Length: 123
Image 1 (cartoon, rainbow, N blue to C red):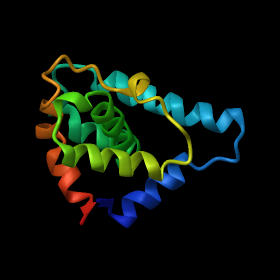
Image 2: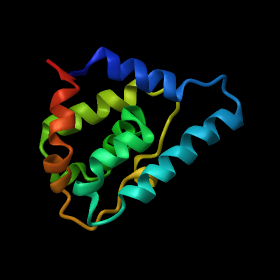
Image 3: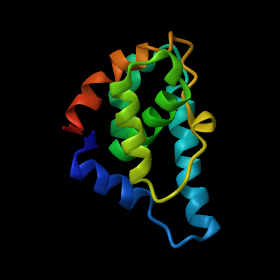
Image 4: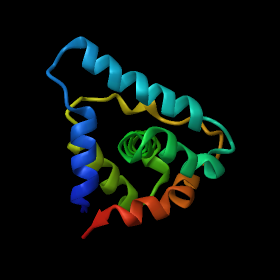
């Protein structure tokens, strides 16, 4: 499974850095902001607002981290998508650190992020 080239390019540009601590901290701080916004039971209603506020790349990486952290409870398709997203990143992330804590059943992310995942998947 692959993610579409425009999203892969956005993720690569968003996470691109020259290896300085400042650049890596910038990306990780943005992921913490996304995580904090989406760590609510209202995450399904706030999903599109998160994309508007933080951009597709940041939300995609946040969704990917959440999916990888919950992989035991999910289907294989979103897990393959999440791994493709994380492989497009120029910075390494610890998925558990940036996973959303929305208080919902782990499989709910497949529902509220499902359209986004399908729209950014190329098979």
